Amino acid sequence: MNAAVRECDVICVGLIVADHVCAPIRKFPAPGGLITTPRLDLSIGGCAANVSTDLAKLNVGVTLVGCVGDDPFGRFVQQQLEANHVCCQHVHVSTAAQTSATMVVNVQGEDRRFIHAVGANTELTGNEVSDELLKDAKLVYIGGFGLNSELSGVNVQKMFERAHEHNVMTMLDVVLDDVSACKEMLKQALPETDIFLPNCDESRLLTGESDPVHQAEYFLNQGAKSVVITSGSEGSLMMDQNFKAIQLPSYDVEQVDGTGGGDAFVSGFVYGLLTGATPLQCLNYGSAMGASCVQHSGATTGVFNAEELEDFVAANRLTE
Image (cartoon, rainbow, N blue to C red):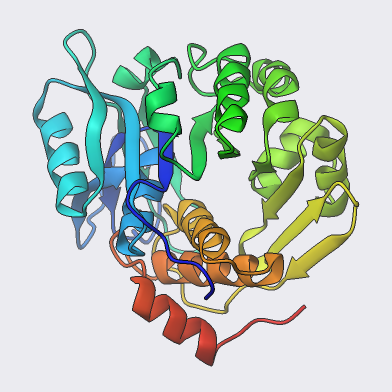
């Protein structure tokens, strides 16, 4: 690679969650029923926390901006983040709200189910990202846009405008709750977004289109400079304002838990950007990180470090 990452290259803004993840169960229990699982794990979750953890494992200097509660789960999350060398200096501890938490239910042969408490994440506005913080960064990533109304389209637009004044790249990812509200928020945020990273299911809900190419075209027409759409086992697609699509398949691996796979993809893609990779190579890094994640229980548990990622991609390079 022709460039080295350095301390605090990336600011991750958004959702911080304590995930309660069950190892795959054979079926979902009926009302009043009980079923056993081999493991129930407590782990880091939330888009911004996951991406920051994965980037730190790739030797990228990263600062996390978000909110947790003054409770055991909040302390657990911060301890785990700091143990993974994520800077938590700008993580606010709320005295009014609990740490956000998600129950992740994995059923064999089915997509995972989530039960989520938004918690302290509702206090994040985006105004916490100061010019002082931006001036030392190369990229600012927002993870979980659309779930918290306080992190509004206008606030993200203004933050991204300030980022561009400091020559900082902007990246946006979504989590859908109220689709109509998110669509309105995106109208304000996308014109200041350099890279928009939804998955195909989110894109279908936001655009009404099932084809990732048409989905990407929609977001480009909304103002995004480039769009990356992930489609799980169907691979990934990238398109910029030239409207020329780059597509890669995914790695064929056995999925244990899909939680965090999209966030791991983001971290690999960002790693590629920071190390001077081509768009095609960035997609390859993203796919490899996603593959490493889903083979283990938990959103960040099994992701590659930088050496493992480089070795895996060199030995298993994807082609269009």
